[in-house]
Each structure stands twice: as C-alpha cells, then as structure tokens.
Image 1 (cartoon, rainbow, N blue to C red):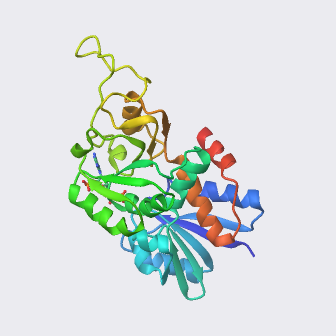
Image 2 (tube, rainbow, N blue to C red):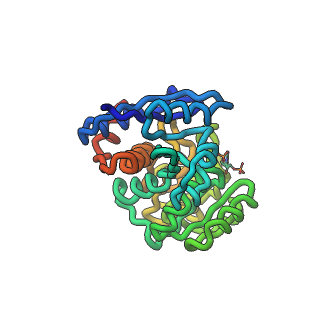
Image 3 (cartoon, rainbow, N blue to C red):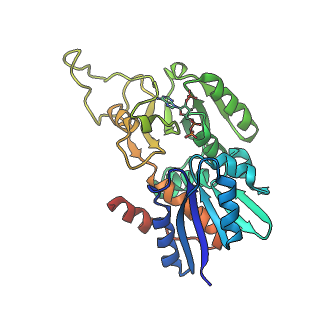
Length: 292
Ligand code: ATR
C-alpha cells in the first residue's frame, strides 16, 4: 500500500516540498505519496490528527505552525528541543515524533554542496527568531564559532545564552560588528522577504569612488572595514527572490554567494531519511529546481 505524507502550512500553495519528495520517491523507488495541506490558522492540531488517523505516516510543517508542531509532538529529537520548533512529524502508533531538519539541511548545503567546511570558521548568524534558533545547534556541532546579531539586541544575547553550553557563541548588536570580519555570514532574518537589509557595517573600497555619488565597484575582494573576510561565504536562507543581502555581499566583495534553495532540498532529504531510512541524492533535485 502506498504510504501517505504531506506538508502542512498556511499559505501552502507555493510549497516546493511535494515536487522535491516526489523526485526523492521516484529516485529511491519508495512507494509513497506526498501532498500539500492548507490548515486553517486556528486548526493545525485537528488537521494533523485527522490526517494521522486517516493513515498519514508523517508530515513536514511550515510557517506558521512550527511552534504548534513542537507542542503537539509527544517525543522530540535533541535538535528539535534545541530549536524549540518542529518541521518534521513522524507518526508511530500513538506517538508523534517531532524533529527539526532545518539546521542539518543548512549545514549539509554549506559543507557538502558548497564545499565550505565550518570547523573553526567565524560565522555571523543574523537574526534571533525561529529560523536562527533552528540552525544554531547544528552550526555549533559543525565547529562554527558564532556571533549572532539581531536588530533587537536582547534577543541575540538570549539566543547566545540558550546555546552557550554547546559551543562558542556570543550575542551582538549590528553596530558592534564594525571592525570584525567573518568567514561565513548567514541571513536568518526575514528581511529579504520585505526586500530590506539588516543594518550591517559597510566597508569602503580600497580605491575610493571617483565622486561621492559614484557606485561602488562590484566584485573586488573584501572591502576595507567590511565584515567579509577573504574567501567569505554569504548565505541567505531565503530563496526564489532577489536577495538584498546577497546584493550587498557581492558589492562588499564576499567571495561566494548562496541562496537557501540547497538548504530547502537538504532539509527535505533529512525528513525523508527520518521517515524512510533511505538517503536520496539531492544534487539532481537541486539542479532541477534551479531550472524551474
Ligand atoms: P522567523 O521564524 O522567520 O525567524 P521571526 O521569529 O518573526 O521569524 O523573526 C524574524 C527575525 O528577522 C528577527 O530576528 C527580526 O529581528 P527583530 O527581532 O529585531 O525583529 C529579523 N528581522 C526582520 N526584518 C529585519 C530587518 N529589516 N533587518 C534586520 N532584522 C530583521
């Protein structure tokens, strides 16, 4: 019998998860179906339980229900507990296992797909909301040395305190970043969705522009006084839209730029592995999504 899976959210019609999981299933020969479910904003729990009782084996959970999923789970993985949010549910009899594969997806994309090893690297994590909580522990476990910066500075210090037992992590304001450099800068804020940019310190060109109004030249190496170290990676967890952060990073001379499409596919692969104990090959799926 075909096993049923789904992604649940509100809104949900934009979700690429059904496409991704259909390709994983086809590639690995797993007999499963995967659909998108729109839950009413006040009806997450009832919708999940109805699907579970109808034979559904597991679900991905997206905005705005990741915290409700965390509360609904009867068992939590360590990484879900750390994230205080759940993006993957697995139904096992009466148990509802809650996991969070976002951070593992980010680390897999950075290390495996982008070939950027995080061990010992200075990482600037921007944002202190759910997205940042979701990735902090896997980044620390990969050996990153994290500075977390947030517009509301208190929240950056709070996040750092929550994860301090797991590795080197400190909170900061954006202003206090001036004079520091990072090997990897990750945008976990929702700023790109609003077409805006976190207030990062701006480096100056080694060759000043000819007039005060002339644009900075693009593509030169890390600018003097900027936050990007030589060979730095700039990573925006958002995908599918022009990212003001990645434009800024390019202008500031970041050596490498990446959006969050690889992370999306990798977190899906982690969920697939949790459900099926089979690891799909993500590269052809990422390549295909880039063409859509
Ligand atoms: P998510 O679950 O996607 O992380 P969230 O919990 O609403 O969403 O958090 C959004 C994050 O993006 C916060 O860290 C927010 O900063 P504040 O805590 O100061 O509000 C950050 N954010 C949103 N827009 C931003 C912007 N234009 N510049 C900098 N940070 C921004």
